Length: 186
Length: 186
Image (cartoon, rainbow over all chains, first blue to last red; front, side, top):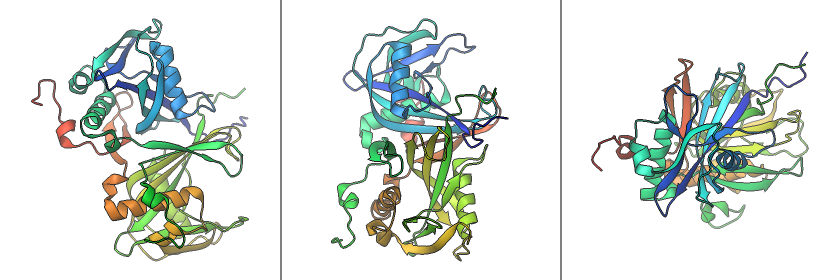
């Protein structure tokens, strides 16, 4: 009998939307061996113990050769009975990343194509997946009207029990509210 | 040998912050058998196949007797080597819920106390956990300046492969951007 806990119910997949504000371009790939060639953000499954942002940065590098840094969390999808997950559920997270390098050297085994595509072109494209399209539109909105409109930000805190750190993601909390004290002035 | 996939790496826990705008009060509990009596939001682990909002609503009802509805996702915490997760990782999600009933009938086995607490009092309280305190401050910010500042919204879409539906969470996407078309006018 398996001793793995029944409550590890989810695999976690992470994609990285590497957007370069200077050029307005975003990094996209097409997977090999698909029926429909859809543009999407590079990504893959988290290894055990890996943080969301680490997975995004690693997968982007493995698939495209582009170095990047984690900026924010943009979206979460929860899906049950996910194909290939053996009855388990899937949590698929899209992060916004900042490009650190720009020369593409993509993985020929995983990808058919890889390019820097104009963000608006991706946001208007029909050759993409529903999620990629929605996130492209969301980033386009952020690019035009401020990324604070779309970013779910990350902060790290010490865990009480383990002595390790955990990462907490939520919308920016203004200092005025963050600093509320027991007897503070309203 | 176990045939459970190694990549079901996470358990998912969900807490529900039931906030009543009419009274400015939020539903909080204290767990039984803890060293420190800290106020927190009711919650617990997701069952396999259960959506984030379903877990929040179910756990709130089981612990407090309060009926509620899912409104939005507020926060995600990722923690590795979580105590009690047998080496797996933990994804802990806090949702904002709307109260449908108001008479508390709390679970005497799980909870020491349960009450409707003034949100500002919780946001200023020292008798709480770090996450509860931050989320209370975040909700207080939303209450004062608009919940659009803090809410990560949910929409449901049909999955291509399974014929089932999945839930996608991200910041509100204005219609102007959502409706971008291949040959649309800017």
